[in-house]
Structures are given as structure tokens and as C-alpha cells.
Image (cartoon, rainbow, N blue to C red; front, side, top):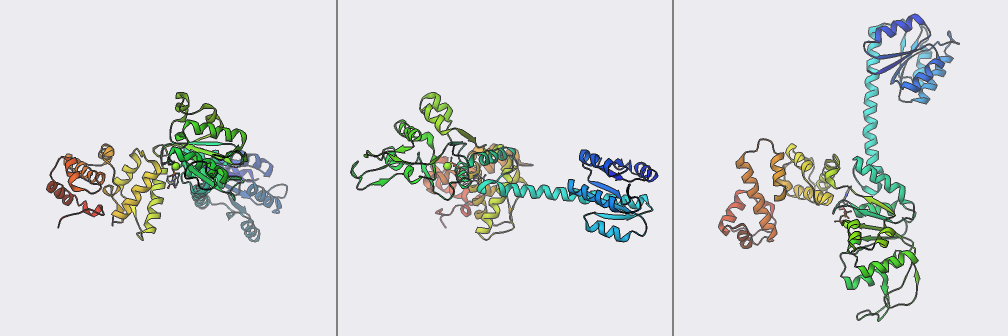
Length: 464
Ligand SMILES: Nc1ncnc2c1ncn2[C@@H]1O[C@H](COP(=O)(O)OP(=O)(O)OP(=O)(O)O)[C@@H](O)[C@H]1O
Ligand SMILES: [Mg+2]
């Protein structure tokens, strides 16, 4: 039951109200300001009726106004209904100007007062809901540097980001592929005092091993064949800024040693160089590998692991982020829709079921791609599951998530998926796709027609 506080010095009125309203509210009563304040603090009632003429100023109104002011200072959202005597209209208006929600003139008619009270509680509930929604929005905007999500797991991540961004400590970000590790690394940089300096990223997994050392530390002229001039490495470029070592789990052991030396000495030598070059860079590393296991297995140096993981931020997989899935899906839908000039899109109920029950091995990146594809492929306002292109591996979940699915429907669905997947895998080579599926080419073309797949594949070579 909602709490209602009645501040009234007249004992008769007080008990009349208390009994009259007890069925609808948990009624608290106070005879004066000093009695009321502790109750307000303890119960934070959403609605208060306040007698204007309170002792020691029963005939005046100053004590009433003082009480109003103190209530609103403590809980500004409280709805205060001033109860005034006859001929106090001016005071009543002043009270409303000072923040009272409404006024009511004595003598009190209980039925009438009940209506006013119900309205006040209703408004209070609306305001509360409104502020909750606003908080959600703020939280999303607050979420550093465009990271979307309000799930408890992500709020923890934000809180870690805020705590460590301004410090200089090394941060290790781990999480499955597509969970937003790079996004978090950028957020850390953006929220740090180094934000006006460079954010230099290097993907340790994407550069051939023989070039990686030079890419990281630079080289002197003639240090190896093809080294025609002096080149600065990424580490040097990151001086005063942030160095993001992406896929650090891919770093070969010999370079792990060199990186460790840099982290200890804060200086580097270019390949083929003798000079020690001081570099002051903040280190952020990321990996989707289980680096602790690799450390135990010896493929990642333990001393390096401790250096780079002073703080460890673990990004949860998308499937563990609850409502964030639809939050992100709708956001991507809106974004892509605007980009392609297609508006008023939404997901059908079946699509929502599918999106929220899917495993998301590719996490946010996969979700983004699926939505983009659906926006391009579907001309409908409502996005149905068929446009979300769930691969065969998820067929089981899809089948479970459909309502009223017959065996025939399921067969059709799997057939369609297999055809699309084979054609995609064979890059639209119909002969190979047919072979892969164990059917003849004409049969494949029939299936493509039957399932209306041509529409969905841009470069398919359909015979006329
Ligand atoms: N919480 C999020 N809110 C909005 N966009 C996100 C979020 N997480 C990831 N993304 C988007 O998903 C894509 C993948 O993110 P990112 O590249 O940071 O992932 P990653 O963990 O580095 O992946 P990988 O391990 O494959 O390198 C990017 O386009 C990114 O903007
Ligand atoms: Mg990445």
C-alpha cells in the first residue's frame, strides 16, 4: 500500500482522515512540523497533506510554509496538498507557487479529497516511471563512447571503465569475438587524460611474424633487405598516447620478450638500431583467447601476462546480456533503416524470439551484420525470421522458437537454409553448390526458385 502522510494539528480532523483513508493507504500522521520531519525521512511518502495553520502559528501560515519548504527540500518529488481554511485563497495560491502540488479548502469532504489524493499518487507514479526511463537513456548516453547496453553485466563493465580510464595502469580486455573489445579500448582512451593524443592500434594477429617486430618497434635503414629507410614503429607513434595491442595472444614468444622489455624499461630499440628510445605509452591489450590457460601451457609468458593485466576487463558474451540484445537489434535496425532510407521497421514476434534465444557466437558484430542483411533483403515494414538468415547450426533453436511449426515447415526451412548456405559457401558457383548438396544442378535451380532465394543473393547466375 502507498504511504500517505497527514500533517494536521487538529486531532479530530486527523483521526477522521486516518480512519477514512486507512482502506486505501498506509496512513501516517503528524501534529506539527517537528513530528513530521522524521516520518518523512523514514518513510519518504509520495503524497502529503499539509495543514497550513500549524502550531505555533495556528492562525497564521508561516509555519505551514516553512514545513512545505523543508519537505520539498528533502524530497522534491513529493506531492504536497495544502489544506487551507476558508478565506485563505491567497495563501493557497502562494503555496502552489512555492511547489505544492495542489490545495484543498476546509471543510474536508472525504470523497472529494480521495479523488485528489488518487490523482496525486497517479502523477507521482507517472513521474517515477518517466524518470526511470530517462535514467535508462542517460545510462545509455553515459555508457562510455557509444557502447550500448544496460544489462547488469555491461553496467559492471562501464563501472570498471570509469574507474580505470583516468589511471595509467595497463588494462587487459578479454571476451569472445565481436563482444566490443576494441570499442572498450577506445572508450578507455577517450575517457583518459591522453584523449587528445594518439590511439595507436596494432593487430598482432594480422601481421606476418617476420614483419611484426619492425611494425611494433620500427627499423633503421638497411637493417634487413627491403629496409630502405628509417621507419618508426607503432610503439613509438603511441608516445604520450595509448597503445592498443589487439589479439595479443597471437604475439610470438620472441616478441613477447621484446614487448616485456619495453614495458619494464619504457624504452625501445628499433630493429637494427642501438639507440634506446624512451616511449611513454599507456598499454591496453585485448584477446579472445583464454590467455590464462595459455600462460599455464607456456605459450604466453607469465611475466608478460602480469604486466599487461594489472586490470582485467571481461566482456560478457552477447547471449548473457538479456535485454541488451533487442536494445542493440532495434538500434541497428534504426541506423541501417535510416542509411538505406527504409523506415518504420520492426521485428515480428517470431523474429524477436529468435534473436533473443540464439547463441550469438559472433556476438554484437554478428547481430549487426544480421540486422543489416535483413534491412537490405526485406521490403516489409515488419522483419520476419526468414530475412535474419540464421545458419543451419541454429536451425534447432529456430524450430524451437517458432509457434505452431509443422514438420513440413521445418523441412522447408532446413532445405532453404541448406541451399542458401551451400550457394554462399561456394560463392555462387551453382555447379559446386549442387555437388555439395548431392543434387543435380537443375534441382538446385528449382529449389532456388521455389524458396525465392535469387532475390536474396545478389550475384546469382540464374538461367532465364
Ligand atoms: N555494446 C556495443 N554497443 C554498440 N556497438 C557495439 C557494442 N559492442 C560491439 N559493438 C560493435 O560491434 C562490432 C564489433 O566490435 P569490436 O570490433 O569492438 O569487437 P571485438 O571484441 O574487438 O571483436 P574481435 O575479437 O572479432 O576483434 C563493432 O562494429 C562495434 O562497434
Ligand atoms: Mg577486435
